[in-house]
Amino acid sequence: MHIILVLDFGYTDGLDEISTIADLAECTQRNYQMLDEALVMAQSCTHGYLEKYEMIPSDRLRKIDVGQSNTSELEDGGTYYVLRQVVAMLNELFMKPPEWMLVLESVKIVAHELHSPRAVKQAELLTVLNIEPAQFLPSKLYSVAKQWWCRNKVLWYAREILGYLPLKIAGQL
Image (cartoon, rainbow, N blue to C red):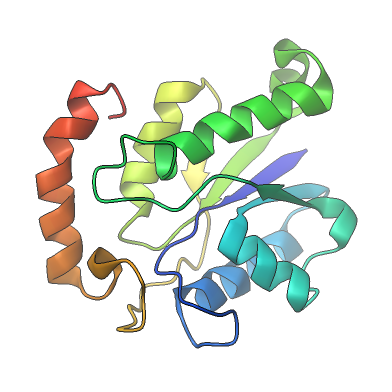
């Protein structure tokens, strides 16, 4: 079994706006078509898009119900808490942690290409699974993003630099 883990990035007010969420959904669909028996676990905004446009069969799609990232990512929102929720969901799905670790062939992370390196690193902190970025990761940034750091590369890198120390101290990097 394969897991495709989808992390929101650059969400907007609605699903109909052209945004990174649409790009992430398209990337998810392309990766899903390349894997047999994949289970897609998607954060709320991208899950909504995938569900609305029926891009993934509903029996293969699970919602990760974790809030969006804030500026410090130390509250219950953001990548680290999404990943913790995924581990809890897998434990619940298979009842015992060792069982899902045995049947799981791979975990592919669908994230914006700027977000992917940190997401993979944080995922490795929480589990011993083989985790890697999915193929065809989106790279475009949109000015309509609600999170200021998702609007352009300079803002993204500024936030990553400013956020590194708090995340490191909190054990999230």
